[in-house]
Length: 203
Image (cartoon, rainbow, N blue to C red; front, side, top):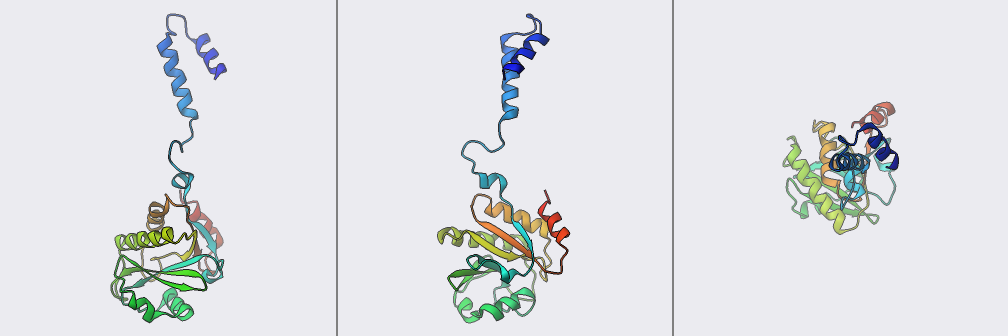
């Protein structure tokens, strides 16, 4: 800062270098050095991003919750939803919760939560970005209430449901940016690792 003041004084004549002008320049210099995250903003709000892994979703750490999308009728007859149904069972338990589109049903297995994001009414339909956002917000509320710190998930809504991952990842960031919850997104093993890394560097 001392060097900056000296340069200003050398470049401007006494007539040009009014006290007000120099103060303005110094304020501009100080502002340029101020970090983007200041005040009451937390680091999570400034830098939250999902993490990316290429591999088997079910190989994630045993203390992390799992999440995926289903329909309100809990059909789960294809794709990764079918794997969840075979691995964790519990369809009657899910139906008893009477959750509807835009909400999130929950199973507890081996002291961790399995989240079922209900993004559509029937298995034959397609979700919307709004219904996905609402179900993620419901899941976030449960995570906060139960102190869940980590969730592993596939690229939700982007397989058979045909949503686009760039938009889905934006929604994830908007919903979880003010939390300390880590979300790890697993891609299918056959997906090239370079593609996964490119998605991680999306912005």
